[in-house]
Image 1: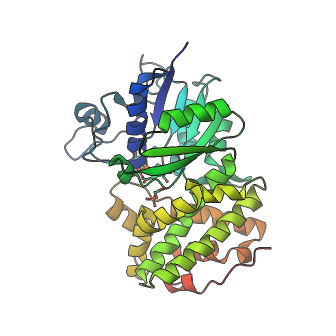
Image 2: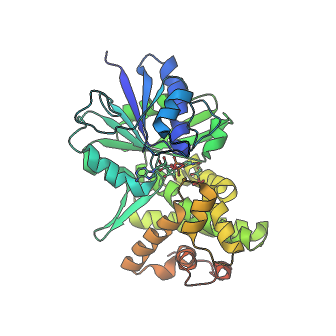
Length: 356
Ligand code: NAD
Ligand code: 13P
């Protein structure tokens, strides 16, 4: 029987950890090819060397996950889609793991159109959405529509550097109908320190993973304002309510139970306490909104990317278009603060939303 060959598309902080997790399993499990190709959006390091070359020499992603061996069977590949070279990242792969920041996925998919056989299975670890004039699309749909493949999602309370240290965490796979594919993805990711559950609610899982990044911005604001734990808990609770209401308005099929999986309340808590969105939003508040997110992101994250500010803008677009702004005062206020239209202190003046 044909073995499954995995390619990981993306090699940031979480992308690198995902490749490490997967590679530890492909070595052990005969269903999979041992080698895992990881596509690197290449860059030149201060040493003058290419990041992809250094990863292959040292087995460490020195820029996005320093100090952690990825496993010898992870091969960094800067060539996503070459039609000239013999070897490129997605060649012969039949399981594709998408894990770039969400603003880049459309471009990555466009480069792959026509190069992916129809029997390929995909999974998205990307927390985000795309908003165009036609309306919002989740990233799994962007992937499915561009490439004509089925796309599951994997989301959860998964702060990457903790998983790199092999500290226990859980994750949720969302799938549509293909239970066999969901089981295969679960086998590919599960380790004794990474417990994966699959639920038949792809939209619910993905919208949770996407919206918690917006709430985490608010959590950072109240941290920066030194408001204390009761205020932060209130923000998290109101945020969870708005997450649920927004998900159901976009996708009525979303299940309440999904919010109790790792992708829901657990990821919300983890990100509001330990994530990058929280950290940069705290700095924004400490600076009284005087330094732009872009500048803080570059200074504090050193090449890693923030998803929450862009997602807040995308969510705002959906609220505006549907005349829902008054129903989502927290989401609305977060975006208005991020763009400098309201002071950071406005975050605590938004009342309990009326979510009829
Ligand atoms: P990251 O923010 O650490 O790194 C940014 C990545 O973007 C780098 O690999 C960089 O090379 C790449 N990049 C820059 N410009 C690019 C371009 N034009 N085209 C393609 N790639 C480009 O990345 P990450 O942490 O792996 O995040 C990927 C996704 O995973 C995001 O949706 C994020 O929300 C999600 N996620 C992250 C974590 C975490 O703890 N880091 C955990 C769970 C989910
Ligand atoms: P941040 O991007 O805020 O670090 O969140 C990471 C994450 O998604 C944890 O599950």
